[in-house]
Image 1: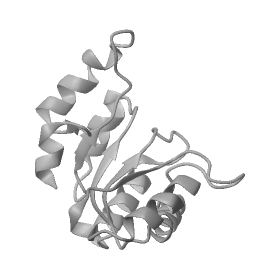
Image 2: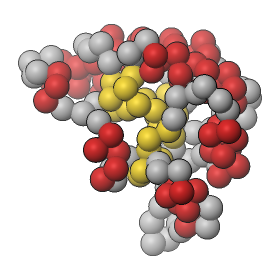
Image 3: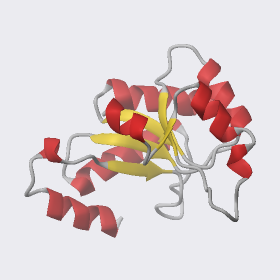
Length: 151
């Protein structure tokens, strides 16, 4: 929370169109605030926007998959956030391929534009399923070229 507040103070002096801003949702923000339920997604985007002193973020990422919340609830809430103009795009981090595919099969939902998998020379697991799936679906790694063009 403090990093967003500090960043909001710094960015407050700059034209909003001059930077790309991303934030994530999932991990505990308090003893009771955690996950990707509709209530949490809406509560956390509003809190982030207030701390960041802005009306929208360019990318709102789900930090992890939430097995305690129905996928359709998560995707519906993310779609509402995009439709409300609070986020321009959505992304995910560390989601299993089968959940990414299931989310893409839901009709009428906002589309993912970025994936941020844990990936290194020591951890290459995403090469098997996640990276090929993202390439097929034109979902870029969040530091990748396609996502920057989407903005």
